Length: 328
Image (cartoon, rainbow, N blue to C red; front, side):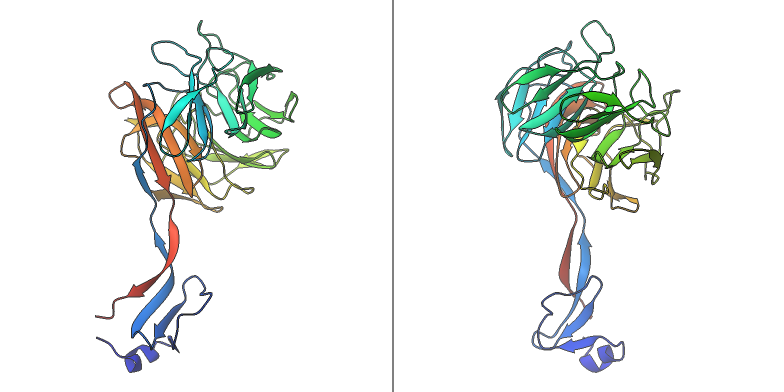
């Protein structure tokens, strides 16, 4: 094993104890333990099985975190209104959605959310919206354009919906009591992943009008949409949920969906600068994701066998640790 004399030539600090607050990338030799140590080692994220959803469905409305979320509506053999709530290990029945629909936008948390747009029983593109207070759904003002396949992000008091089949570059803001049209997205998107806040949001991927998956993102500053970072993989059909990323959208996670070859289980994180690959879902599918790049939930969906599934997966994000390095 290399000794300190060898290490010292590399200008590695010789310390009797690990530093209290090491900097990312810092390397030092602990003379007490005889170990070469480094901080800023990234351990990749991972997915694990969660409690299965009560039935197999797809493209409903969901919001919340890995330990406190809901899933309402969606499509089984037709559109439904039933819902369930997740506590981090199991699902219990929740209040029914005020109307039967799927393929809409949703944002918020378990006790304060808003769902808008979607596809109704007759196949019509809906402009209806409803708020959820954790106990019941209440119909509220309509969005400016009826559509399906839109994306949502933000909170109940301040959220955004963008894209969809009715008008793919359409965007609207919710102020807590009503919707109003906002500036159009810089590109047309259907089934994009929504994340962030009303003043710092991101729409990632989605489909072109011709149906092919996009490998780009659009950034929203509360007024205008501009080109964002490129995705690692082009993908679409990330319906129904939103990533609870912080302002600036760092912490965005986009999971599963469809690429131009079919279902994908690949997942990506936006770190504030670029999209990077993280652990893949065990089951390739499009479904509903809630949470963020630290802790997320992926519920139900439509798998590679073209069948609904009730599978649930829980994501634990990458972490930065201090690690002992081998000197052999």
